[in-house]
Length: 580
Image (cartoon, rainbow, N blue to C red; front, side):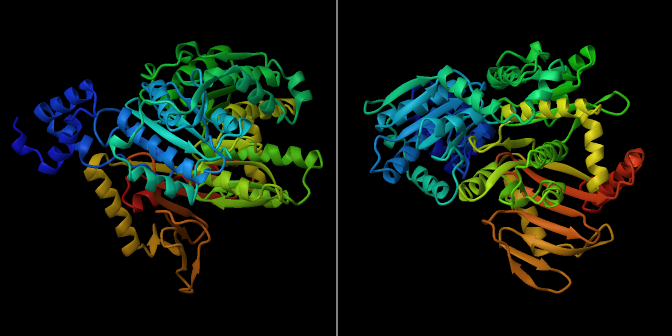
């Protein structure tokens, strides 16, 4: 293989990584790519790894488009520059850092800490892996100006990432997100202070764990019920991630004494040896937990992703068989329980609210209206839920919120999705149901009978690499230029384009503004109440299609029949869109 067959622009970009600003191991790996692997060389250098509004996420390796010491260092230097400008009157800047169990996570966390310290920042670095929500808590608890978590959430093992938090404990939002991006884009490798003195690095751990656990426990709404149901059988798996640090401890603190950890997945391991992908949204990742649940007859199965901000939920159906609930179903159980308990305790005064994302089930909004609690819709991404909490702080009281992608939050002292409190709350809901002689499955059917049976489905189409990104862009462009007037013989009555911030009524031809930030999302509302959302993922090489339909459930006995009819309806819509 000769270099003549490689794009000269790629060769020029790679050549810059052969100078002495980069360590010998990096130079050797780049040389190897140039000589032996032009395809990987192209993928590694065709662009800079984008520092987006949530930070970095990408495959680990050498190159400008990879997660490595240098891309992490440049991101941290840009962040340090912005923080020092923003808080020039409050120096030294204080930053908390945590990481999950992924390969290189602790290394990237250490690099980030050292760069920040070299820029005069005071850094609070967790001594070992910790859940992402605990980092959010630590930012607020330690009165930090910012926070960093090294994680790629539920992505495959090849990935890692870098998420940035503001002083409220939430992920960065406008204008800070774009301002940090600008700073990072202006950084060259020579600007990065990898070594030096100026600030200090303080190790943190148990003291934050204890404070976080205590605040979680304070959110329990039915401790007396838990005392009576403390032997509820629970199976939990951290899927080799950071949840092992806090979830079993927190369940015990809530009062649950019969928690069984899936030992094969209890040890943190960035190779995730027992699963293809450490994603609790996928049934394959839950296999070992399901086996253990069946063996002991557990009432509840819980699984968290590597950074413990998402949780998967398994329950017994009416025939005693285990089923896995999707994110919309779990969010519905959580919000119904919270609203029910707040009402029973006389805590609903008209100043409370819940939050969901635009792709999450409309069932949450129906429940909020029924209980007299306002519901806010936000763009996809938990940072927007955190932003609403911050904006309404001191004016309204946040009860809870969630998104269909298995992320939920209760209470406002954490400002990101929190699988630790979610695990505890789902266990509490199971205890509450058991107290009434019901299962979580029974409770879900009860909700559907009361509000209507909502059925949602998500299809993700993966398009990897440079060509894949271009194909996704072309798909979105086509939907915008040639929007469908009907889908599966159902008329499209409304189109919402969040990129243009316009809602277009297809019947009246009236356009109205959307009062949300710009986002590359399209929604098609069909006659009869169906909703279709098209959205490129901000963290993965995918374009996602969200489908939602609703039907009346006359009785629990007709659940399967009604569900099957809605399943058929969704499949017909998917086929009509050419996605099958």
